[in-house]
Length: 236
Image (cartoon, rainbow, N blue to C red; front, side, top):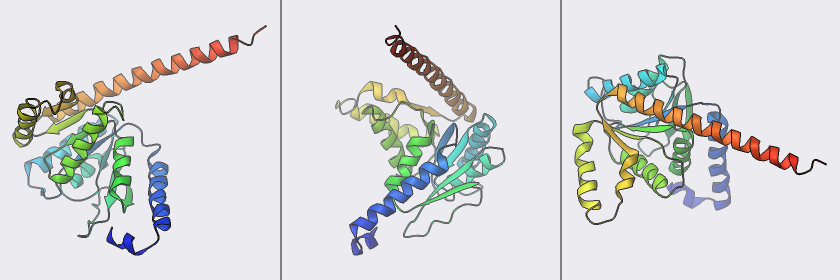
């Protein structure tokens, strides 16, 4: 932010720390959650707005909390769908030059000054991403998650692009041009799913949730086994 240039860099660090601390404290018990991204410009009568509500409702019915950027459009639709059920409908709001007004369908609302702190919360607390049609902000979140997985900085998570007509051109370009020029690998596209079906979104997330639970149980079993070995070393 421009005003940061006027003050002490030390105090800026404390502001940044406070956003991370608040985010971790508020979201630590959120449970399985899915982030839904998309344009703030869609209205209630638009088809993608209605689809975002349906996706969020189905996710909520399957026990997922829903996380959005907290604004209007697709974010409002997703929060609205989740809020109808007994799950957390989270808005990670951001201070912008053109003031973003938080939508009224959030039952847990956080406010961020810094985009990078907000991004950490999306990545850390999301089991998967659903990218509804959107602009540069949606693309930013999509490509950042893809890059983090490609570089093994985070565990794999489903990246669902909802809206074949909207996203197919981008995916075709990525495959035709990037693969042809060897600036991306075929395996990178295994993270991405393209669909028009809200039920398929839930099915993909459920499979991933089951896989994560299987990996968690396996890791827990291995830890207990290693601890048992350690205790045995000291037995007479």
